[in-house]
Image (tube, rainbow, N blue to C red; front, top):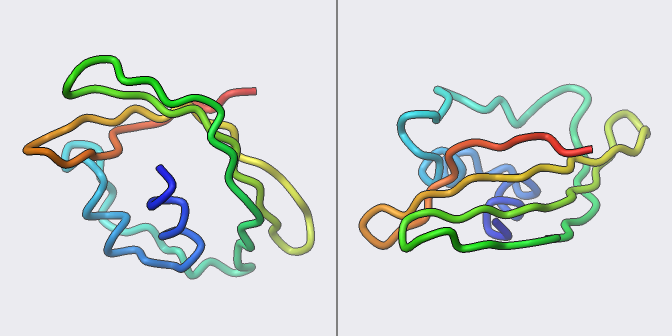
Length: 94
């Protein structure tokens, strides 16, 4: 999760797509949005291994867009394939 957050901060679209499960991966991410997103911090609330091939991570990522602060609170699902973890999907939390 931390590496994916860092990739968002640095605009590393290729890394994000490579670590996204092929069945749910978008074609592009368009990280160069206008106005740009300024990421302010990540707080991992909970990381839970469900099985050898499944895990969840609850986190809050803070950011600003056009000077307005906001946050993304998500429960992300990951699967492990051939020793590598892949992001599958996320549910927004309040």
